[in-house]
Amino acid sequence: MRLHRPLLVIALVAAAVVGVPPVAAAAPPGKDPVQVLAINDFHGRISPTTGNESRLPTAPGPDGVFGRGGGGERDDVVTQVGGAANMATLVQERRADFRRGAGGSAASFFVGVGDLIGESPPESATYKDEPTVEVLNALGMDVAAVGNHEFDLGLQELRRLSGATDGRFGDDIAACQGVTPGVDGCFGQAEHAFTGANFPYLAANILSAGTGEPILPPFEVLFTPRGVRVALIGVMRESTATSERPEGLGNVVFREEADAVNRLVPQLRSEGIEAIGVLLHAGGQRPAGDINGCEALDGAVVDINQRITPAVDFIVSADTHEAYNCMLPVPGGEPRLVTQAGSYGQMVTDVRLTLDRGTGDVDRAATYAATNVPVTREAPDPGVRAIVDYWVAGPAGQVPAEGAGALPGEGDTGSGAADDNRLLIGVVILGAISLAVLAVAGNRRARRNRRRRAWESYGYAPVGRVRTPPRVPPADTPSSRD
Ligand SMILES: [Zn+2]
Image (spheres, rainbow, N blue to C red):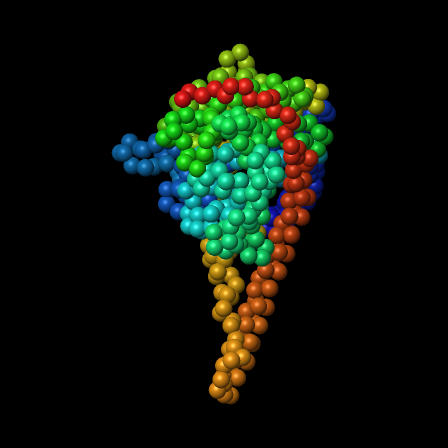
């Protein structure tokens, strides 16, 4: 933000000089513009990725078509992408872009569609993915659906990572409960102390076999500044066969994805909520192509979309690590936005909607579109980069290791002048290290605060999130294909 603010100011001043209004006209009366920024299958890629994970084909080669050229060679235009600090910059830029056009009634949200953790690189995996959770908190994630990899270390461990649901939906584990800090959890120190995910994890279709109740919140309701509500329902790929089921999930029953959504929609509408999106950790496949294309899309998401009620306004999908941006036909309804943003932080999907304040629904004749935007690497956000650097170095590398500054004990005998000098030098070095550590920490804190202020000036903080979902109808016999 520090880099971009002056640029923005210059742009605004330049616009004023040539007589163009610096801020575009606000949204039409009665309409609330909404932006939903989405990522999926991040898999703890907080550092800039390397190799194929970092190479995103963003344009066809000289032959004009994606895929290999006439001679069988890879000729697509490739862009280097990825890294959480770069993603932070992109999120800020897309928000700024949205708000310039949308005005004060606009609302912007940042959501995840599962597999954000699990199968992570060492800088996150070594610390039970607490680093990735800290990064997602810094990115301002509002809500996420679970993916299968969220359960890699078991449901109880996911409950420990989830701070936002503490005290409900069976989440009786606080962030540092049941672990020995620094040994098997709560690895971060000082400002990196682990506090759990600030966002809730959702799963509408995973029910406790014992109680028939969802094991996690089924949906989250988000508000625009004027109080129009958008419900996001989280659903995970159904895994009925025990062999496909994440091991740590325990004794649960899956509901078929569309069925789980369709059961919730009447409940939401009876509460007056008409704008509804689904965060679906299931996806489709397609041949290599434009990240904003949809040709030849195949797979689970196509079928699930067909069975989800037309009352659902958009589906952000995941799981297959593919990129697509579709308007898929819906039986008995209008075509619906269905997207996915690749994997490993390669891109962010920017969904833009217009809500009608009269009906509370998405006005599809107004803005109703999405764009997959590559996470390019020009200007990493310094605040998020500092968090990533901390974890790459490892918590032990950040402060003097315990015992490193141990002074000679009182019982030491025969300590002559040489020993006294060593003691003095030790104290001086220790003092210098402490000052350096304090200075670094202070700088980080200051940077983080500056960043927070900058984001807030764009209305960054989500408004009026409902913490407790409305009553969910008691689950009757859960459907299962077992
Ligand atoms: Zn994945």
